[in-house]
Image (cartoon, rainbow, N blue to C red; front, side, top):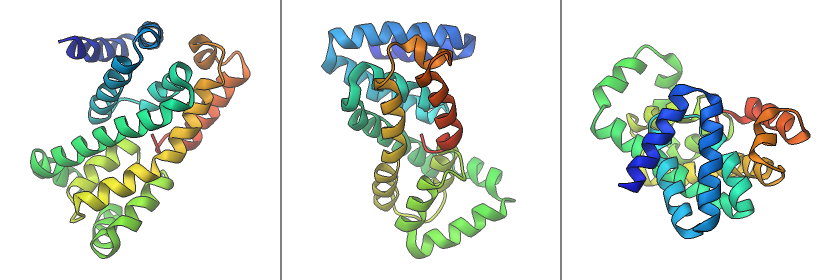
Length: 202
């Protein structure tokens, strides 16, 4: 029940405005500092759900860096892996026809589908490292290709690590959550630049 409430709060905050999301993240950070294990587990669950629902996870990754420091890196990768797995499986077994219809006229996707059949692991790794396709969209698109799930998730989990490390660094280097998002300090400006540079990675 607590997890569902936290997920609902996250959804509501994003639906309202950025200030509400910032406030929610600060409350979550305070609670996670008091109960590290529970906070980490809830973070992974929220990250997974957020990935499935197309939330901009870079914001949550930066916040995790502020709360846990470098320990946030494995937590982010774990949460991203949960989300990438769920998105892939939903696309393959639940929304396959709908996703295929949306991608049927896309020549780039047709080319990717053919290449994945030859060397799926390498193609997924390249797509993750070069953010040509947005992170959340790629999760669903690859679900309707012929790639094996094991190849998809191992390549994906490994190759989201660089972007995760960058965003976690920005979070752990900040003095506060406010300084991260305000843009009034070095970390804030760095956050904007990094987000533009690797927004498709996480």
